[in-house]
Image: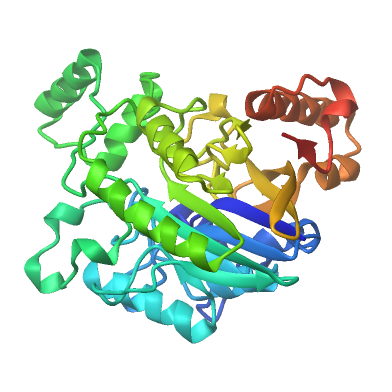
Length: 400
Protein backbone atom coordinates (compact mmCIF):
# COMPACT_ATOMS: atom_id res chain seq x y z
CA UNK A 1 0.00 0.00 0.00
CA UNK A 2 1.13 3.50 -0.79
CA UNK A 3 0.07 6.65 1.09
CA UNK A 4 0.91 10.05 -0.43
CA UNK A 5 0.73 13.51 1.16
CA UNK A 6 0.96 16.99 -0.39
CA UNK A 7 1.52 20.31 1.36
CA UNK A 8 0.02 23.78 1.25
CA UNK A 9 -3.05 24.04 -0.97
CA UNK A 10 -3.95 27.72 -1.01
CA UNK A 11 -5.57 30.24 -3.31
CA UNK A 12 -4.21 33.77 -3.27
CA UNK A 13 -5.60 36.59 -5.35
CA UNK A 14 -3.01 36.02 -8.11
CA UNK A 15 -4.35 32.53 -8.70
CA UNK A 16 -8.00 33.23 -8.05
CA UNK A 17 -8.31 36.02 -10.61
CA UNK A 18 -6.98 33.80 -13.41
CA UNK A 19 -9.52 31.04 -12.75
CA UNK A 20 -12.76 33.04 -12.92
CA UNK A 21 -15.08 31.91 -15.72
CA UNK A 22 -17.59 33.95 -17.68
CA UNK A 23 -20.44 32.59 -15.59
CA UNK A 24 -18.74 33.72 -12.37
CA UNK A 25 -17.56 30.26 -11.33
CA UNK A 26 -13.92 29.28 -10.70
CA UNK A 27 -12.26 26.34 -12.45
CA UNK A 28 -9.34 24.81 -10.54
CA UNK A 29 -9.21 21.63 -12.61
CA UNK A 30 -6.43 22.79 -15.00
CA UNK A 31 -4.26 23.75 -12.01
CA UNK A 32 -4.27 20.40 -10.24
CA UNK A 33 -5.10 17.88 -12.96
CA UNK A 34 -1.43 17.36 -14.00
CA UNK A 35 -0.87 15.83 -10.53
CA UNK A 36 -3.55 13.20 -11.01
CA UNK A 37 -1.32 10.64 -12.70
CA UNK A 38 1.29 10.75 -9.94
CA UNK A 39 -1.29 10.67 -7.16
CA UNK A 40 -3.18 7.81 -8.81
CA UNK A 41 -0.18 5.61 -8.05
CA UNK A 42 -1.10 5.85 -4.34
CA UNK A 43 -3.88 4.05 -2.47
CA UNK A 44 -4.74 7.02 -0.24
CA UNK A 45 -3.90 10.70 -0.59
CA UNK A 46 -3.86 13.58 1.95
CA UNK A 47 -3.54 17.37 1.46
CA UNK A 48 -3.14 20.39 3.72
CA UNK A 49 -6.12 22.66 2.97
CA UNK A 50 -4.62 26.03 3.91
CA UNK A 51 -7.67 28.18 3.30
CA UNK A 52 -11.26 28.51 4.45
CA UNK A 53 -13.84 27.46 1.86
CA UNK A 54 -16.67 29.55 3.19
CA UNK A 55 -18.77 31.00 0.39
CA UNK A 56 -18.53 34.02 -1.91
CA UNK A 57 -20.61 36.24 0.38
CA UNK A 58 -17.75 36.23 2.91
CA UNK A 59 -15.35 37.45 0.23
CA UNK A 60 -12.83 35.40 -1.68
CA UNK A 61 -9.10 36.07 -1.18
CA UNK A 62 -8.81 39.83 -1.73
CA UNK A 63 -5.22 40.29 -0.64
CA UNK A 64 -2.02 38.51 0.23
CA UNK A 65 -2.66 37.20 3.70
CA UNK A 66 -6.36 36.52 4.25
CA UNK A 67 -7.84 33.63 2.30
CA UNK A 68 -11.19 32.21 1.26
CA UNK A 69 -11.70 29.88 -1.69
CA UNK A 70 -14.65 28.70 -3.76
CA UNK A 71 -16.04 25.22 -3.22
CA UNK A 72 -14.63 24.22 -6.61
CA UNK A 73 -11.17 24.13 -5.02
CA UNK A 74 -12.23 21.13 -2.96
CA UNK A 75 -14.02 19.38 -5.82
CA UNK A 76 -10.87 19.83 -7.94
CA UNK A 77 -8.85 18.12 -5.21
CA UNK A 78 -11.36 15.29 -5.16
CA UNK A 79 -11.01 14.87 -8.92
CA UNK A 80 -7.26 14.27 -8.62
CA UNK A 81 -7.82 11.71 -5.89
CA UNK A 82 -7.33 13.57 -2.60
CA UNK A 83 -9.05 11.41 0.01
CA UNK A 84 -8.67 13.59 3.13
CA UNK A 85 -7.45 17.01 4.21
CA UNK A 86 -5.96 18.67 7.25
CA UNK A 87 -7.73 21.87 8.27
CA UNK A 88 -5.34 22.72 11.13
CA UNK A 89 -3.39 25.74 9.88
CA UNK A 90 -2.84 29.43 10.53
CA UNK A 91 -5.52 30.51 8.02
CA UNK A 92 -8.35 28.46 9.53
CA UNK A 93 -10.15 31.56 10.87
CA UNK A 94 -9.44 34.01 8.04
CA UNK A 95 -13.21 34.42 7.68
CA UNK A 96 -13.81 34.52 11.42
CA UNK A 97 -16.19 32.15 13.19
CA UNK A 98 -18.72 31.96 10.37
CA UNK A 99 -16.11 30.97 7.79
CA UNK A 100 -14.51 28.52 10.21
CA UNK A 101 -17.81 26.71 10.70
CA UNK A 102 -18.88 26.89 7.06
CA UNK A 103 -15.63 25.29 5.90
CA UNK A 104 -16.13 22.26 8.10
CA UNK A 105 -19.79 21.95 7.10
CA UNK A 106 -18.89 22.20 3.41
CA UNK A 107 -16.27 19.45 3.68
CA UNK A 108 -18.82 17.25 5.41
CA UNK A 109 -21.40 17.96 2.71
CA UNK A 110 -18.94 17.10 -0.07
CA UNK A 111 -17.83 13.93 1.70
CA UNK A 112 -14.22 15.08 2.19
CA UNK A 113 -12.83 13.60 5.42
CA UNK A 114 -10.84 16.07 7.52
CA UNK A 115 -9.10 16.58 10.85
CA UNK A 116 -7.62 19.44 12.85
CA UNK A 117 -10.58 21.81 13.40
CA UNK A 118 -13.99 21.02 14.84
CA UNK A 119 -17.54 22.36 15.04
CA UNK A 120 -17.99 21.00 18.56
CA UNK A 121 -15.64 22.42 21.24
CA UNK A 122 -16.13 19.15 23.12
CA UNK A 123 -15.42 16.93 20.11
CA UNK A 124 -14.27 13.54 21.35
CA UNK A 125 -13.26 12.01 18.00
CA UNK A 126 -10.35 14.25 17.00
CA UNK A 127 -8.44 11.70 14.95
CA UNK A 128 -9.27 10.70 11.40
CA UNK A 129 -9.29 6.96 10.73
CA UNK A 130 -9.21 5.20 7.39
CA UNK A 131 -8.55 1.67 6.20
CA UNK A 132 -6.49 0.65 3.18
CA UNK A 133 -5.99 -2.97 2.22
CA UNK A 134 -6.95 -4.22 5.65
CA UNK A 135 -4.53 -1.88 7.46
CA UNK A 136 -6.05 0.69 9.82
CA UNK A 137 -4.52 4.18 9.65
CA UNK A 138 -4.97 7.24 11.86
CA UNK A 139 -4.24 10.83 10.80
CA UNK A 140 -3.69 13.48 13.48
CA UNK A 141 -3.47 17.15 12.41
CA UNK A 142 -2.23 20.03 14.59
CA UNK A 143 -1.09 23.64 14.00
CA UNK A 144 1.34 25.96 15.76
CA UNK A 145 -1.35 28.68 15.71
CA UNK A 146 -4.17 30.49 13.89
CA UNK A 147 -3.75 34.04 12.59
CA UNK A 148 -5.64 36.59 14.66
CA UNK A 149 -7.16 33.98 16.97
CA UNK A 150 -6.79 36.14 20.09
CA UNK A 151 -8.43 39.09 18.31
CA UNK A 152 -11.65 37.18 17.60
CA UNK A 153 -14.64 38.71 19.37
CA UNK A 154 -16.77 36.72 21.81
CA UNK A 155 -19.69 36.70 19.39
CA UNK A 156 -17.59 34.66 16.95
CA UNK A 157 -18.32 31.77 19.30
CA UNK A 158 -15.02 29.95 18.80
CA UNK A 159 -13.17 28.18 21.60
CA UNK A 160 -9.54 27.08 21.77
CA UNK A 161 -10.60 23.42 21.85
CA UNK A 162 -12.02 23.72 18.33
CA UNK A 163 -8.47 23.76 16.95
CA UNK A 164 -5.67 21.29 17.59
CA UNK A 165 -3.03 23.75 18.81
CA UNK A 166 0.62 22.85 19.39
CA UNK A 167 1.39 26.11 21.21
CA UNK A 168 -0.69 28.67 23.04
CA UNK A 169 -2.91 30.59 20.60
CA UNK A 170 -2.06 33.69 22.64
CA UNK A 171 1.65 33.48 21.77
CA UNK A 172 2.82 36.38 19.61
CA UNK A 173 5.40 35.46 17.01
CA UNK A 174 6.06 38.56 14.96
CA UNK A 175 9.17 38.75 12.81
CA UNK A 176 11.10 41.93 13.71
CA UNK A 177 11.92 44.25 10.81
CA UNK A 178 15.43 45.73 10.46
CA UNK A 179 15.81 49.36 11.48
CA UNK A 180 16.73 50.56 7.98
CA UNK A 181 13.38 49.26 6.72
CA UNK A 182 11.46 50.95 9.56
CA UNK A 183 13.35 54.19 8.80
CA UNK A 184 12.40 53.91 5.11
CA UNK A 185 8.73 53.44 5.95
CA UNK A 186 8.80 56.42 8.30
CA UNK A 187 10.51 58.62 5.69
CA UNK A 188 8.03 57.71 2.93
CA UNK A 189 5.05 58.27 5.17
CA UNK A 190 6.38 61.61 6.40
CA UNK A 191 7.01 63.07 2.94
CA UNK A 192 3.83 61.70 1.38
CA UNK A 193 1.46 62.04 4.31
CA UNK A 194 0.23 58.56 3.42
CA UNK A 195 0.28 55.49 5.65
CA UNK A 196 1.57 52.39 3.88
CA UNK A 197 -0.64 49.32 4.20
CA UNK A 198 0.60 45.77 4.77
CA UNK A 199 0.81 44.90 1.07
CA UNK A 200 2.75 48.03 0.23
CA UNK A 201 5.21 47.33 3.03
CA UNK A 202 5.75 43.82 1.68
CA UNK A 203 6.48 45.25 -1.78
CA UNK A 204 8.87 47.78 -0.25
CA UNK A 205 10.70 44.98 1.54
CA UNK A 206 11.21 43.27 -1.79
CA UNK A 207 12.53 46.47 -3.37
CA UNK A 208 14.94 47.03 -0.47
CA UNK A 209 15.90 43.34 -0.47
CA UNK A 210 14.93 42.93 3.16
CA UNK A 211 15.23 39.27 4.21
CA UNK A 212 11.65 38.04 4.48
CA UNK A 213 11.96 34.49 5.86
CA UNK A 214 10.02 34.38 9.10
CA UNK A 215 11.91 33.13 12.15
CA UNK A 216 11.05 29.82 13.73
CA UNK A 217 13.44 30.21 16.65
CA UNK A 218 10.80 30.85 19.30
CA UNK A 219 10.34 29.64 22.85
CA UNK A 220 8.42 26.44 23.36
CA UNK A 221 7.51 27.24 26.98
CA UNK A 222 3.77 27.22 26.23
CA UNK A 223 3.85 23.86 24.44
CA UNK A 224 3.65 21.23 27.24
CA UNK A 225 -0.14 21.27 27.85
CA UNK A 226 -0.80 21.16 24.13
CA UNK A 227 1.66 18.33 23.68
CA UNK A 228 -0.13 16.52 26.49
CA UNK A 229 -3.33 16.65 24.45
CA UNK A 230 -1.43 15.51 21.37
CA UNK A 231 -0.14 12.57 23.41
CA UNK A 232 -3.72 11.72 24.42
CA UNK A 233 -4.77 11.74 20.77
CA UNK A 234 -1.76 9.63 19.85
CA UNK A 235 -2.47 7.08 22.58
CA UNK A 236 -6.08 6.81 21.44
CA UNK A 237 -4.96 6.39 17.84
CA UNK A 238 -2.38 3.76 18.75
CA UNK A 239 -5.12 1.67 20.35
CA UNK A 240 -7.28 1.85 17.22
CA UNK A 241 -4.86 1.96 14.29
CA UNK A 242 -1.91 0.03 12.96
CA UNK A 243 -0.13 3.07 11.45
CA UNK A 244 -0.40 6.56 13.01
CA UNK A 245 0.40 9.61 10.86
CA UNK A 246 1.11 13.13 12.13
CA UNK A 247 0.37 16.14 9.89
CA UNK A 248 1.59 19.27 11.73
CA UNK A 249 1.45 22.86 10.47
CA UNK A 250 4.78 24.28 11.69
CA UNK A 251 7.91 26.10 10.56
CA UNK A 252 9.03 29.62 9.68
CA UNK A 253 7.80 30.72 6.28
CA UNK A 254 10.35 30.75 3.44
CA UNK A 255 12.96 29.10 5.62
CA UNK A 256 14.55 26.18 3.83
CA UNK A 257 15.99 24.91 7.13
CA UNK A 258 13.84 23.97 10.16
CA UNK A 259 14.06 26.34 13.12
CA UNK A 260 14.19 25.51 16.80
CA UNK A 261 10.43 25.55 17.45
CA UNK A 262 9.45 23.20 14.62
CA UNK A 263 12.46 20.99 15.35
CA UNK A 264 11.35 20.74 18.98
CA UNK A 265 7.71 19.99 18.15
CA UNK A 266 8.55 17.39 15.52
CA UNK A 267 11.13 15.87 17.84
CA UNK A 268 8.49 15.47 20.56
CA UNK A 269 6.19 13.76 18.05
CA UNK A 270 8.97 11.34 17.13
CA UNK A 271 9.43 10.50 20.82
CA UNK A 272 5.71 9.80 21.17
CA UNK A 273 5.98 7.07 18.57
CA UNK A 274 4.29 8.38 15.42
CA UNK A 275 4.99 6.16 12.43
CA UNK A 276 5.42 8.99 9.89
CA UNK A 277 5.37 12.80 9.97
CA UNK A 278 4.36 15.12 7.11
CA UNK A 279 4.76 18.80 8.06
CA UNK A 280 3.83 21.90 6.07
CA UNK A 281 3.67 25.70 6.39
CA UNK A 282 7.12 26.94 5.34
CA UNK A 283 6.08 27.58 1.72
CA UNK A 284 9.27 25.94 0.57
CA UNK A 285 10.66 22.46 0.92
CA UNK A 286 12.84 21.42 3.84
CA UNK A 287 14.71 18.24 4.70
CA UNK A 288 13.06 14.84 4.63
CA UNK A 289 14.92 12.29 6.74
CA UNK A 290 14.56 9.14 8.76
CA UNK A 291 14.39 10.19 12.41
CA UNK A 292 15.29 6.79 13.73
CA UNK A 293 12.69 4.62 12.03
CA UNK A 294 10.26 7.50 11.41
CA UNK A 295 10.10 9.03 7.91
CA UNK A 296 9.91 12.75 8.68
CA UNK A 297 9.12 15.48 6.18
CA UNK A 298 9.89 18.82 7.85
CA UNK A 299 8.11 20.77 5.11
CA UNK A 300 6.40 19.53 1.96
CA UNK A 301 6.28 23.07 0.58
CA UNK A 302 3.69 24.70 -1.65
CA UNK A 303 1.13 23.15 -3.95
CA UNK A 304 -0.59 26.21 -5.39
CA UNK A 305 1.23 29.38 -4.34
CA UNK A 306 2.01 31.89 -7.07
CA UNK A 307 5.60 33.00 -7.48
CA UNK A 308 4.13 36.40 -8.37
CA UNK A 309 3.00 37.06 -4.80
CA UNK A 310 5.03 39.97 -3.40
CA UNK A 311 6.35 38.06 -0.39
CA UNK A 312 7.54 35.00 -2.36
CA UNK A 313 11.27 34.44 -1.96
CA UNK A 314 12.55 33.01 -5.26
CA UNK A 315 15.92 32.02 -3.82
CA UNK A 316 14.17 29.33 -1.76
CA UNK A 317 12.49 27.85 -4.86
CA UNK A 318 8.93 28.11 -3.47
CA UNK A 319 7.59 27.06 -6.88
CA UNK A 320 8.76 23.48 -6.22
CA UNK A 321 6.84 21.23 -3.83
CA UNK A 322 7.00 17.65 -2.59
CA UNK A 323 4.71 14.66 -2.50
CA UNK A 324 5.73 12.54 0.46
CA UNK A 325 5.17 8.80 0.06
CA UNK A 326 5.22 5.86 2.44
CA UNK A 327 4.89 2.21 1.44
CA UNK A 328 3.20 -0.07 3.94
CA UNK A 329 3.16 -3.83 4.18
CA UNK A 330 0.80 -5.18 6.81
CA UNK A 331 1.32 -2.96 9.83
CA UNK A 332 4.79 -1.67 8.97
CA UNK A 333 6.24 1.11 6.82
CA UNK A 334 8.81 -0.59 4.61
CA UNK A 335 9.88 2.25 2.33
CA UNK A 336 9.75 6.07 2.19
CA UNK A 337 10.18 8.24 -0.88
CA UNK A 338 9.19 11.61 -2.27
CA UNK A 339 8.38 13.17 -5.63
CA UNK A 340 9.03 16.73 -6.76
CA UNK A 341 6.63 18.87 -8.76
CA UNK A 342 6.88 22.38 -10.14
CA UNK A 343 4.26 25.12 -9.99
CA UNK A 344 4.39 26.26 -13.61
CA UNK A 345 3.04 29.68 -14.54
CA UNK A 346 2.73 30.72 -18.19
CA UNK A 347 2.73 34.48 -18.42
CA UNK A 348 0.19 36.08 -16.11
CA UNK A 349 -2.67 33.71 -16.66
CA UNK A 350 -2.14 30.00 -16.19
CA UNK A 351 -0.87 27.88 -13.30
CA UNK A 352 -0.25 24.14 -13.53
CA UNK A 353 1.22 21.81 -10.92
CA UNK A 354 3.36 19.31 -12.84
CA UNK A 355 5.61 16.42 -11.67
CA UNK A 356 9.16 17.28 -12.72
CA UNK A 357 9.71 14.11 -14.72
CA UNK A 358 6.63 14.80 -16.82
CA UNK A 359 7.53 18.46 -17.20
CA UNK A 360 11.06 17.57 -18.26
CA UNK A 361 9.79 15.15 -20.90
CA UNK A 362 7.59 17.90 -22.36
CA UNK A 363 10.42 20.42 -22.81
CA UNK A 364 12.26 20.80 -26.10
CA UNK A 365 14.36 23.89 -25.38
CA UNK A 366 17.82 22.77 -24.11
CA UNK A 367 18.17 25.88 -21.95
CA UNK A 368 14.83 25.26 -20.22
CA UNK A 369 15.75 21.62 -19.65
CA UNK A 370 19.11 22.61 -18.16
CA UNK A 371 17.44 25.18 -15.89
CA UNK A 372 14.95 22.58 -14.65
CA UNK A 373 17.76 20.09 -14.04
CA UNK A 374 19.63 22.64 -11.92
CA UNK A 375 16.59 23.65 -9.87
CA UNK A 376 15.48 20.08 -9.22
CA UNK A 377 19.01 19.08 -8.25
CA UNK A 378 19.05 21.94 -5.72
CA UNK A 379 15.72 20.87 -4.21
CA UNK A 380 16.69 17.20 -4.02
CA UNK A 381 19.99 18.04 -2.33
CA UNK A 382 18.19 20.22 0.25
CA UNK A 383 15.54 17.60 0.92
CA UNK A 384 17.50 14.37 1.08
CA UNK A 385 21.13 15.19 0.41
CA UNK A 386 20.98 13.70 -3.09
CA UNK A 387 23.81 14.87 -5.30
CA UNK A 388 22.86 14.57 -8.94
CA UNK A 389 23.53 16.58 -12.07
CA UNK A 390 21.96 16.89 -15.48
CA UNK A 391 19.11 14.60 -16.38
CA UNK A 392 20.06 12.25 -13.51
CA UNK A 393 18.46 14.81 -11.18
CA UNK A 394 15.06 14.23 -12.81
CA UNK A 395 13.33 11.27 -11.20
CA UNK A 396 9.78 10.09 -10.57
CA UNK A 397 10.55 9.28 -6.94
CA UNK A 398 13.54 9.88 -4.69
CA UNK A 399 14.49 7.68 -1.75
CA UNK A 400 14.88 9.09 1.74
